[in-house]
Length: 364
Ligand code: OGA
Ligand code: NI
Picture (cartoon, rainbow, N blue to C red):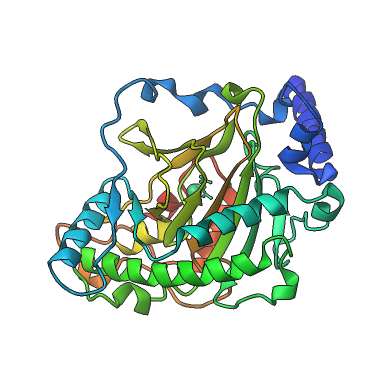
């Protein structure tokens, strides 16, 4: 390494540390009235790989109506086919008539806004990088290892398999977080049934495997950005769990990478975004995809979203996951090594977001 690079790294590290030490996140920067973003947030130019930005997208992210899928019948078979096609292509789709009332989704987003709009003194008490805490709120979980910081603050907590003591959840969103998580768990179980059928398996297969046992809830705040062309709300990444159910507000900015083109996941009132994660791609032996996606920064904001990951994360469970036996054949031989959910999560966390695939390290 040249001395020049050493010096640059030194300044970068002290800027990262100074930012982290404020415990006020990106929202704190914006509230202080800055009109230029600090250079720690500047994305490397290739992050924007503009070649994909001007062509017409090859696909649309479909909105699938879940109405009438409770009973086995023609309607359910139609929906299973749609979910199968979407999961095999981009891995992303949206659902409506999913059973979670509009009012509950609105209150969930309101709860997130209340959390981020708290007095900085109060909010700072939640700021931590200690993963053993019930609620981990910070800006950029991979701040000190990512190539550039994202224009985003995030708080997360694990709501299953063990529901945390409610007293340990922030008052600003405590009640709705518990109510919303329960409803997402129930929707998740229904989706795993449909996904099982879409893989040609018994409907209870993925739930029996434990795919819906754990739930990590991440609530994000993407503050308004004065120079959105220089940074990203979230760098490209694939999700680390089995499945993600995402609630986003009306602002937009989420894009999925499909055949080298960025495709918008356009907000639609009442809809939830569903996408397969790395562990689903692994156990489905590549039948279903965990696609890379990102969030653009925006002059408008704050944008808020709630990402619910079905995974037990770092809970030390011994169960090994590998490609499901029924999905292995001569034409489709085993493509992945077995792993525990914890080992996969640790590996993913150590890599951080950005242009590296944690899943590819598990290929045989
Ligand atoms: C995530 C994610 C997208 C969004 O949390 O992994 O991709 O719109 N979130 O917040
Ligand atoms: Ni994601």
